[in-house]
Image 1 (cartoon, rainbow, N blue to C red):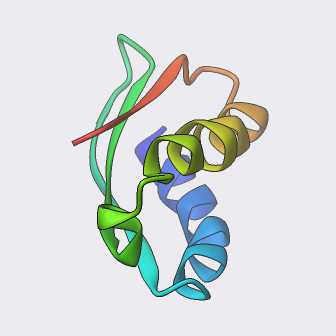
Image 2 (cartoon, rainbow, N blue to C red; image 1 turned 180 degrees about the horizontal axis):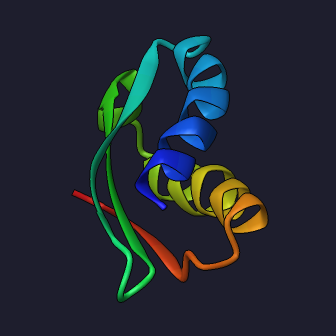
Length: 74
């Protein structure tokens, strides 16, 4: 699952980089279906980072990898 998550993250990165930010995968817990990521750059300090995490990152990952139950910030 970690490889799949990283592939999806690579699809998301250009959108975040366009706003001066990026994202890193910190860990993937296959048993819990949990992915921990870190928003960096402009995205890390943005007041909308929670919305970005849930509405873009989590939704995109869940659509492509149904085994993922949640995406959380590191």
